[in-house]
Image (cartoon, rainbow, N blue to C red; front, top):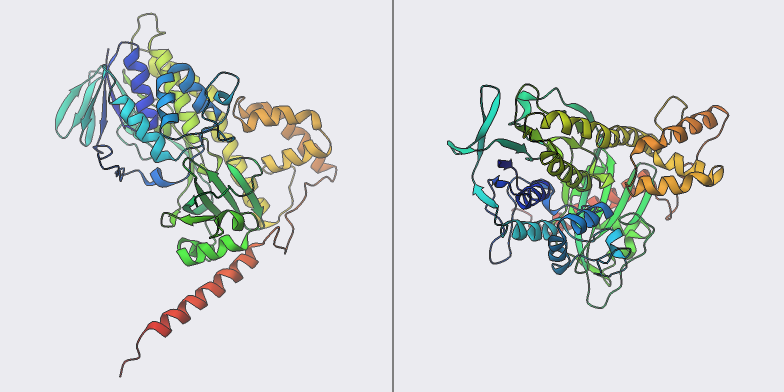
Length: 459
């Protein structure tokens, strides 16, 4: 079967390699020509390319099981496990996350996909999906038709070519924005403190910070704030960002100039949403995967794991249709996604609402959102038997609906007067938003004073 994939990101390339190895002639379509021989790569149209990503154990295990040579290439490019090991043996770090920059991971996949015998590339702008008589016949790229019996929309969050054939997208504003900067450890320097997750996480009254470890001694510091907090939006300025890092215990250790140095500008992001859309209706041979299908708040580092899982599920369904080809593929993929992806969308909507409530200092209410922090607190204080399931949830080896009975119990506990510990402050250990604003204000005043001192007075 001839397959055309719109979008050559990690999800599209994984789908292409899986389908190509199953004997399907696959074309990857992307307007980006790929990395240059000199090593540069701007990655046209992919804002998140230089932002931190979490490559959870599912990424490593899926590649190890389905595309082991590609996993080898990613590890050869520098990816490691949290213990620094590059071992990919079963039972070892194959079950651990991949510590690697998105740019390094994607370059390894790009090079691997480019050597696949059944995969070809077309560089250009995808104009439209060509549909005739209710069937897709290909993709129009720069006014030229690329024939295909199956078209896969993997063009990301802003994918629009399959949109007219799909039901309305469920979209919920995350209510958050972020600022991030990438650093590199100095020669001989050890990493900063770790407390789980991507490496280091702190929650504060009014904001949160995350440190993501990557490859080759690189890491990224991420500040997440309510999107309505315009003062904290000043974190997009380098001098403000650095002052904020110095103010947060733990983050200050990571970014200490004696330990590391910044290697990129501060990158800010807003307009974050959780989105879920179904598969195309009334047209045969058109499906959507990756962020074109399901988007979650990047804070949770769930996007690529869910996208790769969808690519693998699609490849399985393509060759598991009893010769039906693409006839009922969208319907079967829709059923799979409703069971495996939709729960994560719903979970993140509730998680985001609970996080904003936590940051604001509001009490948890029985009929309101119950986020992971409340579930963990309840488990630690009254229900230790929940902890193994919560660990599997955080590792994404079970779907979030396994937490439904836990949430019901927490609601009952809240009705009886229980509350999870509140974020306290002021202190350096739990810096508040107001303390951070004071740091920002001092930094802004200092910067303005320096600028005024450096500006000649006109005669």
